[in-house]
Each structure stands twice: as C-alpha cells, then as structure tokens.
Length: 428
Image 1 (cartoon, rainbow, N blue to C red):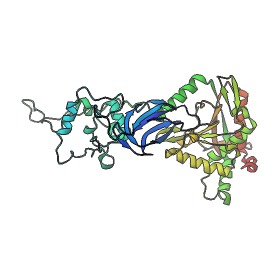
Image 2: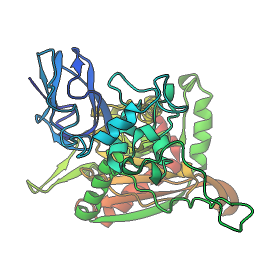
Image 3: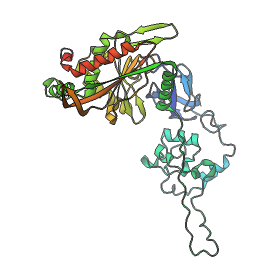
Image 4: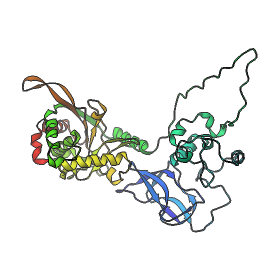
C-alpha cells in the first residue's frame, strides 16, 4: 500500500522530506513515526497509517514532495525483499561493497572501539537522522566518527568537526605505523594539520524555505521604505504603570506588545496596508481581519508565526499571545497553521542592539514594520533639551499596493500613538 503526503496545513502544496525514520525491510506498526517533513517552516513527524513491512521508499531526504504524491510503499508481507541490500531509493550499494563489509567484520568481537557509536539493530553506527543524512551528502563514514550523543550516537556537531580523512573513501586505519624519522635528525616534529578554510553546508530546511521566500520578495515585490524617529517616553511610562495593575499581573508586558497594539489601531485607519496583490487575477485583496506575524529568531532559523484575528485582541491578550507564540516557535512546536496566513508582520531588531533595519516584505503581504532599539537620548521636549526614551520605526511596503503618502501617513500614525499612548487606553 502506498502512503501519500497529506495536507499538513492550510492548503499547503508541498513539503520537504527531512529524514526517514525507517529503512526498506523494516517492520512498522500503526501510528509509528516513519519520516519527518518540513513545510511552512514547521517540522512535522509523519505516523504510518497502517502496519506492515517497508517495501520501498519513494523519495529521498531533501526532496520536495507535492501533497498527494506517494512517499512510501508498505506491504503486508512479513518478509522484506532479500535480493538487494536495504537502502534508500537512489542510494544503492557501493560498486565495491566488499571493503565496507570487511571493515565491519574486522571489528573486535568484544565490542566497539572507544568513543565509537554503539550501533542500531540493523548494524549501522548510531546517529541522529540529521547526522545520517548529512554524512551521506558529504561522504563521511559514520564508523570513523566518534559520537558525542546519547550512547555514543553521532550528531550534527560531530560531523561538522569531521576531518576530510574521515571520508568514506579514505578511512585511515586506527593503528598506523609511526612516522619515519629523517636521517640525521635527532627528533621529529609533527607537522600541524591545517584548519579547514571552508565549510560547506547543504541548503535545506528552514534556510532553504526562507531563501525561496526572500528571493521571491526581492524579485517580484517593488519595495520602498520609510522611517521615523519617535519619543517613546510616554509608552515606557505607560508600560510601567500597566505592569503594576492587577490586570497585567504575572505577564511579561514588553514594548513590542504596545507597538503591536498601536499598529493594529493604525491598520484599522489604513486598511490598504493590510492587503495583498493577486497577480493571477489582477486584483488587490483587502483583508478585513489582521493575522499579525511576529518575526522570531530561533536556533533553526527565522520563523514568523502569526496571531490569528489579532485586531480583536486586547493589549493583555496580545502580550500573552506574543510571548506564547514566540516560545512555541523557538521550541519548534509552532504548527503549519500558525506559520501561514499572515497579513502584516512585525520584526523587532532592537533586541539585537541596532537602531533600525530594512526588512523584506513577506510574499502575500503589503508591508512589514521594524522596531529598533529603545535608548535614552538627548531630545527636544517642550522646547527644552531633555533625556528621553527614543526609538526608530522602519516600514517596508509593496509599492504596487502602497504609495509613499499612504506608507508615510501610516507610519506617522503609529509614531503619534506611541508618543501619546493615553489615546490607546480606551483600546487596550
């Protein structure tokens, strides 16, 4: 029976196969995880819809698979094919497999060498799925790499430090003859091994999808940017006041939440900023709801989960939900639904200590707002020089949808709300 890639989110068209958790010949149970795929920046484990024996893997790790395309063939027979070695489709046995088997046979019967992976039930060295995939791609023999993971499993970090002499085609024996001392030399000094001058990393996963989105943005969206520097002192004072109230007790109320609220208020006054360009139908699609994207830097790369119907949320709800969804993205738990369907995006580069940025507009949206660092600076306040909290806001927008006047007025509206945040009190 064939298992086809299901739709994992809101109308997603494809997914990237990250890794297989099974091999040809394996027996799988109902709901056993058989593969990991990544779509819309979310990594999802795929369970098997039926039990049986893996007959054939119909895609390779790294492939982009269309929704509805066959992924794996599972038979009901208890025995796997015996005519050939169990390998991934497209990764057949080496033309000279004898040498690899000979190395395995030469291993001491009492156990593995110190620091080597323990191995799995199929006789392969223990390794994480990601490490096994990378090893195939760069030609490293996992038996020559000491693993640092649980029970000696080889991890991605172990492979990043693997020297070229660990390549499968050039595995150096563990015990080698001592170097020959040149005639007339009393001592022999070992020549230092030069450090690698380059590291090549396969483009995959989040980086691959982010790259595709950014290229699409740069190539198909004529973008313009505008900036405003604003007095944020009133907003900082309001945040301090709200944190002391019972309504916000126990919450982490950040400036980003207040900027988000001001942005949502401004979007209600400038709906053209919450629209998208439909090239196929030659239409401008104005959204009467706001799914507010929050750019989050994670260990796996940039993610932009969005808060559904954020326009209807109070400041308290926004504060809680921004914190929750950012943590979810960092932990890898954001779902495809939470990572798709955004209508407007906020990015906070101020947390990195920079004053502003020029972010690219996400495809399918009209604009993105950038919040810079909030610092104490000299500022003219009521005709007197004073030390005030100051920040710079930057707006990038699709010039097909937004004229310079619209973009500038929208940004000025947000700045005015943040300079006099008491106008937001009736809407928090």
